[in-house]
Image (cartoon, rainbow, N blue to C red; front, side):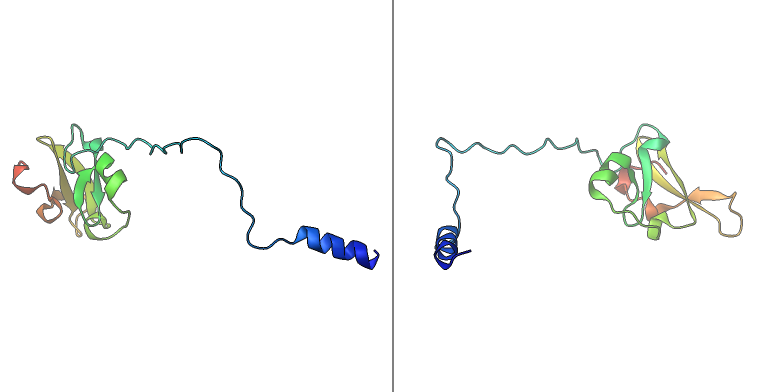
Amino acid sequence: MPRTALSLVLLLGCREGPAVLPLEAGPIASVKSAPTAPTADRWACSVATDCVNACREGAVNQVWFDLHGRHCADGCANQLAAPPRCIAGRCVAFARDPKDPKLVTRNDHCTACEDDCAK
């Protein structure tokens, strides 16, 4: 390539400052956020399958957990945790006896639904 042609290519290809794309004329469209999922009461339930064991929160509503909880296998969701139950419309935690896994008792430590849980 001749020297003058190379110089011309370099001059035309290089511009001072960053490349700026023009904005379209008119108002800026507002960005709408995605609708949020309905929030559930932390401990509310109708049936046992509405509940899940959460390591920090204890027995909680599955929809609430999906929005706010974190998965792990310790704390109230450890290897001794039995499936939670729905009692009087509230999720209640249960645990297996380490010596007899068939023996299941209520785990009040992991039932954090305050005073409105049936005992």
